[in-house]
Length: 226
Image (cartoon, rainbow, N blue to C red; front, top):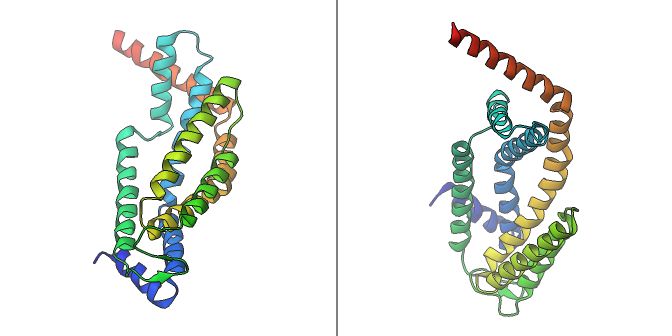
């Protein structure tokens, strides 16, 4: 029995298994919060650098400067991102395994480890998904907005249909996880992290970084010539 399974079973013995899964989900997502912050902050910094380097005319210079600015600003590499994704995936997989190991008790109109025959849980999950897509909708050009809507509809339909084939405990986890992830994204990531990055990595600051990199590059080239 892994520690997460022991923790979940203990919660479910103390309170209702449905609420136990809910509390466990929030606990697991909160434990992964540092990963979300690192990943989101990394993405925001890369976006700010890309926006700044668009003003560089020469393509080769733009590409080289972008890479050097990433290094200077300590932007995490793909290998690091894969590593923290791996940690998050492992934790979530352990939690899903813990849900599957719960006793198949009758809770409300469904059993924890059986498919909800009424599909009511799937409808609840569908409502959560639609809410998330509406809140996360980003305005852009007409083409971008249409593509975003099409992708959202396809994703929501696929997830909804999948939820009708998995056990109730997993659907409960998906629903609560989606709601809590929405809260984390809007309040913590976009509300705090993104604003902090925009405040720190201003155009003036990025300009100074770019000039410093060019100065160091010029000095290195002169030393090479000598």
